[in-house]
Length: 217
Image (cartoon, rainbow, N blue to C red):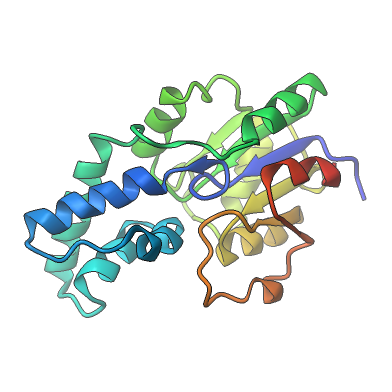
């Protein structure tokens, strides 16, 4: 195996704990629509699946297309106005990033979150200038689990796929990393539901906490 030179992270539920702000935005949307507000514990495992999944969680699976689109756009508008209030790096992650930087290893982000949300969030947490690459859901024609965004991240970081580790908390993250020829790690501390069997995702290993990343470099 090639020596690891670059560590790539999914964003929500892997690098940054965004669930509090994303859940609050859903609470506000539900309040506007006179819909019952869901417990945070019910919302957290769905956050990594994005705005459509959150809207369907709160308003039901069988929404008309126009209604779903309205609720999605309204949700995103609410979230955009307060996307970095409670969001922060998962505990222990900053120490990992500093260790990578000290050891002259590169790190970056590959997320399906759109750039108009990803970049302001990274800027708010002062991570944008530290990352070797930031690839959002609209940075390439295809999104994860397609390997295109992974290859684009390598291009930006000046790395080869076999030199990269990709860390995520969703099946599509692991599939994307594997499709690109990267080593893959599951962030067990992320937004993974009790109903999900992560053992069949095909990852190389699991991480109980962010610090465990250093064991795989």
